[in-house]
Length: 285
Image (tube, rainbow, N blue to C red):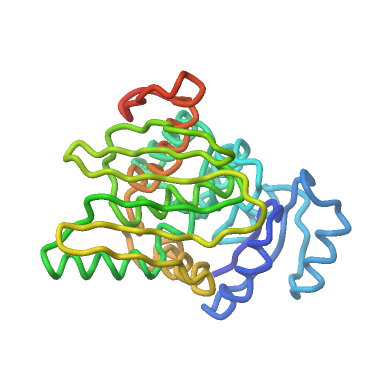
């Protein structure tokens, strides 16, 4: 498939491009809004990676590609860019975080109901370690009851990985979120209606911290640190069959996919409002 890259703000385009090529796809061009890097960076990027074109607009890019990948670090632009590309009949992969407001996330749900081919989010949602544990628990008739996950750097742009890892371990359908404490980093509690509990530790750290989890099930305790060498491949292996049309169903329904972002938004609402419990059937924005 012919792929176009939109807003190459982060390190992900550099890392994903060789993986996509190994999967047999062609990166045909880049369209960058200039929010982070100057034009000279974009021109150097396409030259370094052997990419043919720098598109001047999303309209130009849409005419030349089958799939667009939105990499911009300003998550408030993701939905508008995606809307334009989906209207042109293109499949769209949105890098994490999918969006920064509940209203924008609900637009993704609406598009998916109209059979738009769109997916994305954090690669931690598809990490090998969590998926292997879930398969093991299913085979043994076990399930996670309490989980603690952590990562560093920030509360949302990078912190979304911790929420996504919790979702990968515990599954979807959380009922409420509450901010518990701030000691330089933030501690957040996520509750499910059946009594399962997840704890997330996110926020600024002096250096990059690995993605880590401790999980208590009905029968065992599991602890792991995620192998980051496989993360991008795991994500792309999960989403590309759907985006290319090889399969009709997305790797997971959009309503489940957006939950980590909704949890993070609810957590922010909680700490801004005296650490109250925020139910997920509210409308945090």
